[in-house]
Length: 387
Image (cartoon, rainbow, N blue to C red; front, top):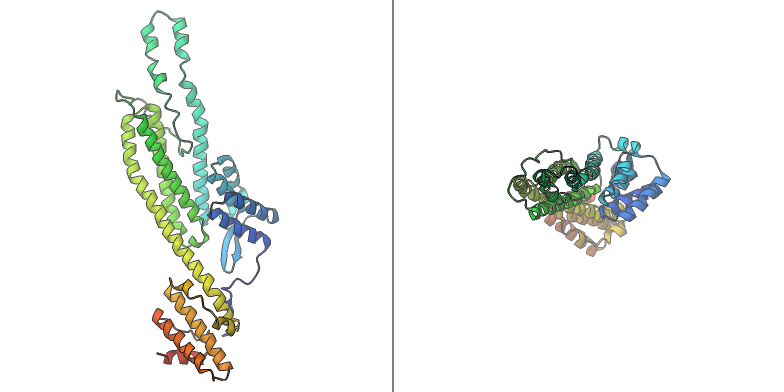
């Protein structure tokens, strides 16, 4: 029985965490709430105390996580679209080594891919812009005034290209698709291209929200599958945005129609991912709340503080989870029984309350049963005989 009690006591985080662990834990929580300034401050405090990333530290109780403040500082920079800082932080050698083979590595690689693509697009934008200004035609006209028709034909291309610098700042992969020739006689619909870019922006925002949700430590058990789905959608979004940039640069109306078709399936998939993650997070948060409500009661009972356990009255907080509610009533009944025995078994009103708790627990969960290594034989006999 002693070993069983000690094992259960481990569920209750009595040991105080080191300061850097406390800052790190609060920094993760701030990042989950998208409080980036607070998350940055806490992560930098943790770094000042413990600068070395670690693949595994005990955060509290039996919760183990990688210690990588550089990763969360990089996440903050990525969320604020500061890609240069994000890449420098996410490529930190110690941090990369600490998350290798863990779920955080997938998110790290996704953010690095996104930022590298954005920086590549930003670097390529100035090289395409100088080709647009109409500086060549005047020089040609000055040197060869005889053939004006040829000087006039290059004019439409420069005049038509100013709408090309419309790509949104967030554009992942390189736009290398050479679809310039099909700049057909069909008028290019700039408004349609802008609408497609806006839809891609909304999809990017949804995927960013999904990434923040996935940072919730409570989702550790299911993060891998969600992350794979999100990475696939992120890659697909990058390809569509690259196609849109190419179509806009080439004034290709046919390609724009194809992009609309791709967006018609991409947007619902991103929305479904976010909604599914919200539901998973809600379940995880509920489970965390249940653990938080049960732990003080279990600690009081297992620690021999029967009076405190017998006074438990937080039933409303557990009504959403009948099984947890039944366990709480079972612990309270057992604590009351111990007090009844210690009092000489004379308090009949207390004995009635014990029976009421047992019946209520059974009504909530027919499978509830006190394990022999945590409850006394007399209480288990009473539980079996109470109907």
